[in-house]
Image (cartoon, rainbow, N blue to C red; front, side, top):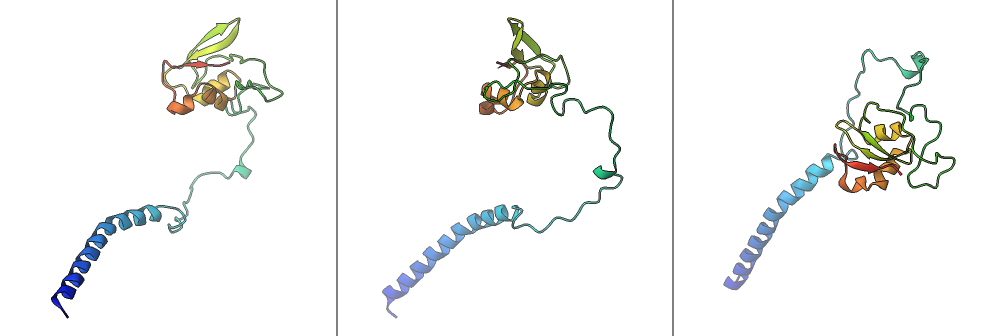
Length: 156
């Protein structure tokens, strides 16, 4: 074999080796990412829940759970409208857990709400018989991702 052919083979081997060395971290990263996906992961071991009563064996409670389905609201107010039947305007049902901020009324109707520490969108929606995702998008909260104490939300 000629010297030039040997040099070409050696150079090619160095280039291929360098490319392999560069590819190994990327392949390892992809492998670790894929192995965290449920499709590629082994089935988790079943967890034993000691001391819990199955739902079918529980006694029904006499009182409904408040704040799970907007408390005592028969209808909801939708800030963006379009859903019927619905309330004409939000109703303030009073301070509650996760909705303890202050309210500004316009013509006797809750219009602005100042977020207090510990407030949550679901709690605010429940307090005002309002569809809480509607408040979320109506105020562009989805753009910042969360509410903070002191934020002022439009209710209508």
